[in-house]
Amino acid sequence: MLITVREDQLKIAMGFLSYLPEYKDISAAQREIDWYQNDANRQLLLWQDTASRHYIAFLGLEYLYDAIVVHQLIFSVEVTPKERLDLRQAILDALSVQYPKKTIMGTVKTQHIINDWREAGHIE
Image (cartoon, rainbow, N blue to C red; front, top):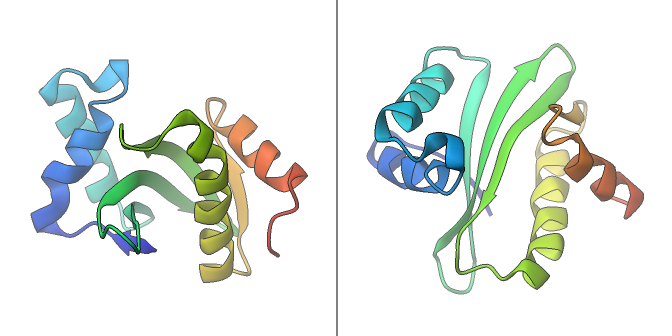
């Protein structure tokens, strides 16, 4: 289930960012969080597993015109590589359902994720 990151969940978001090498430094992760918070067209989301109630994925999004740009899609260490493909599909399907009139796109780093999702026959 997609959940918008609240103020009291920012440390969780920073924890997910710290999984990426470019955000290992806490000040770099904080700058990235600030970048999202300083523009109403950007949003941080968490994916909560319905069974365990744990947050197991993080999304960084930007809304541009009729599109949603996925900047980050980061998984918790508890999600195995085998589970990630199905989870990625579920997350992007949920995003598509939540914003049916928006085109979901990626950045240079994340477009392959979107392409794989489309090829697998996502929900429209």
